[in-house]
Amino acid sequence: MWNIRSRKKQQQKRAGKRKNLKKSNGGSKICECGAVFAQNYKESGSKSRYPNILTNFCETVKIGPMVNQVELHPFFAQENALETMRHYGVVPEAWAPLGGGRYAPFENKTLLKIAAVHGKAVSQVMLRWNVQRGVVVIPKSTHRERIVQNLDIWDFSLTEEEMGQISALDLGYAGTAVKHFDPDFVRMCVTRKIHD
Image (cartoon, rainbow, N blue to C red; front, side, top):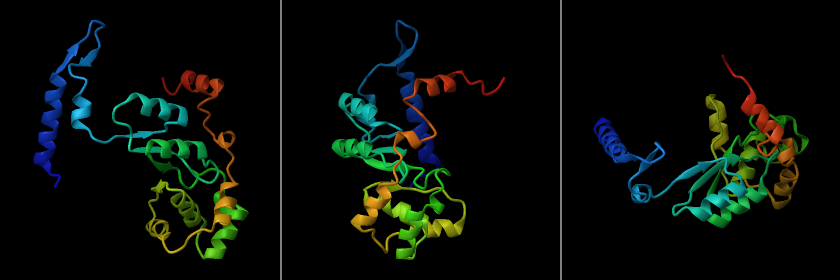
């Protein structure tokens, strides 16, 4: 059970480990023992690791991530990312499983038709699609009725044909608002002044 005493013990342990840091010749702090991470952490997770980055990461560390949270929804299906995660035994977790307020999914004719066949909401169909692909979904909502609705996806299954129709909605990387691989977009982000 997690309580204040155990929290204080954890903080003390972390503080003790920080004392084991020493200055390197370059002035930055390095860990005396490279095995500290391996001894103390049996699992890790990662976020937004695209297939090329995830591959590099998994091939160069002793303890790979257990989970990788990436944008996954019918309009950005990322089949290559899912295949890479399967290869390394990494569980995919959907970031923005309902599209993140973009793409107008609740007006999409394909999703509306499939939802009507099953007597479900479009959001339930989108969540079920990802679950059937082996993706963990944790949709964000502050409305009790939507939270309950989002949990009610276990009493139906999508057919292979329906899964294919939903997968066909994929716009690929071109449909995303954030262009991680576009040098102009990256330069714009890096040079944009946010505040004084």
